Length: 291
Length: 133
Image (cartoon, rainbow over all chains, first blue to last red; front, top):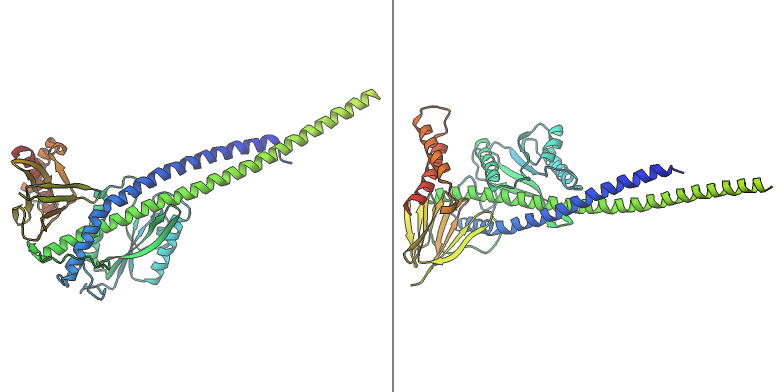
């Protein structure tokens, strides 16, 4: 039978842990709400750019533009280097269940399947893990998710776009967690460049005047589209991260509660048997005297 | 008189969705005004002043880049940064203007001239927004 004091100490420490996990759950819940709000706020801008890209596509303008994929989904990159790039979006912090490890596993698989590849990591966890396993990381960005600033995202996406144009990748894919619900995250692999517009019938039929000219417009449009695509993925990932953390911490809190109950039971048993032993000792002592 | 609807959309929020009499937009090929019945157009925006008129009263905004489309009396302005008069820090803008001019006057390979030029035009847009209107 374990020492009564030891059990008591363990109960206290488990209670402390439970308090921490519970607090983390609350924090994650409030951050999740904020992240969801951000996603909703970003929607009009993203939808609008989507529509513009589709319109341009629909009218068959700029089919030789580097940023756009042609109608068969093939790339227009003439001087292609036969190399692809992968952007891996993970969280900066842990304690969120299998959120990071799932992404890292998917990324590793992708890297194994593509020999000529450059990897860009957004999020500290992914970088820390992947740098041990591959030497193909060309860029990494840490601590983005603390601030969630569009200006920072724009810097990242400008770098990505420059890399795409300079190194002539055939395509850039992104692996990230999509926010499905607070308890479910889906791992998504999506092509970022060249741009493949979403399938939809919503196109503007209007004949626009293009000023200064179509090419300038398409380049600008493409640039902005990449900005907002990355922004959208980062928002998704951050919402998914908070959701995953919330669930993980909820489970941890529950486990701690169970453990506390078990330990309390053990503690009571130990206490009881100690009392029983004491009573027996007293009783037999008293009997010895009376005889 | 019928009105023009102005929508200003930023990546993080929709800033404005209102009706007004007419708008003057700093397009990359020159400022242009939009009244009702304007022909459909897509153009990029250069750093400058966006004016939104209601009667004789004009509201001015400093705007730095983005797009504008005009279609069916709706002006959609898609931009990353837009500032009202109150949001502009005039001291900072003037310092930025000075700094950018100094950089442009020096001949050196270390200087990113395009960046300095953008910085200058942004600073000027801010300063003019406050001074002229």
